[in-house]
Image (cartoon, rainbow, N blue to C red; front, side, top):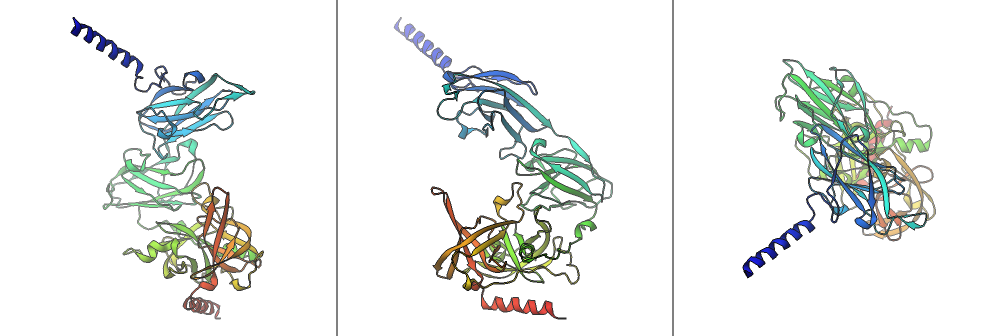
Length: 507
């Protein structure tokens, strides 16, 4: 009898625990998640006394490249969380989180997101995820109505690329951060070459035969780098050897919330299209300021990026050692020009990647390096008698506290699309600081990552130093930038620069 009563007690306790424990996907103390249908608005209500959120779920189709969740028609802004397979109780555990802008909240999840969109069940939480209570007209709100709508963008082909012809496109986050093209490879073709040009952001290329691909890990072949210009060559040695038939190529952008323009070419030759080999001549500078801007280059490798200034008309560039350290110390076999140089033709646009060069000298102690431009971006010869715009050298020993300092370069914060346009900031010479290598110049000019190696010029637009690093104090919301004066340039380098200058000016 006692054993029988004990068994009943255990059964009742188990049933109570099962009832108290929320089912998968169910918020603590909440109801079963409501099932959403694509493009179907659902009206719901957040109960601040019942957990402060409402949970939904939706199935993402296999061919979806973008999921857009919109929360509208609400008196106060609400947060949105989305997580695949398992719901999240905390924002830190969610795959994707969006906060309101004004009253509406929009969360976009694409195949290019940090956690890419995948087919399967997503749990979506809408609610008040912050601390404190929701208040409207000075009174707490207990019930917050809202409308949630989920829509999907399906993979589709934007067009068929004709061999040798230029195709112009544009990518934005509302399009799923990608554009898909088809290319028909004829029998007998040995090579398929795809090139991106006229790019104003960081774009990548994905390719696969017979099927559309939207994520890098799903592609048979890909060209992924921080560069704007990308080239993908597919032949018999590729991971997926070239074969006749329809191939699909996706132009994707790894960063979101911006629009990128581009031009794409497809050819059945290993050589670049003739249109891409043209190197424009820099415009003649109108004044000393424009001369300094035209002489400040974008400098990048596969490891890092920064800025540099042209010291001689044949393309000798001064930059920081730390900008090119990896390729300076560990040159790759067979890659003679690992440094990519971008020229600002129009300050409204990001620099054009037009040249390649190599590190010819570096000094770790003073954090300086010299890069020599050897050829065009596609390793084509430079035009005959091509001359770079150079920056005149000033004398940092003449600088005094309070003098104007102009900083020119390509800071990361100077571009929201993955590639920065040239940026000019102004400050003053704030002071000096003695270091083992010499006296550093301090300035309040706005200098950040990407400015390294660029130009610090005086009021007469002469180069007096190289912005090298900055100190930031988040608590005081202040920063101080440090400039390595050009007086630290080794004497042997000075002689090299002077020799190049004399050679170029001979009649």
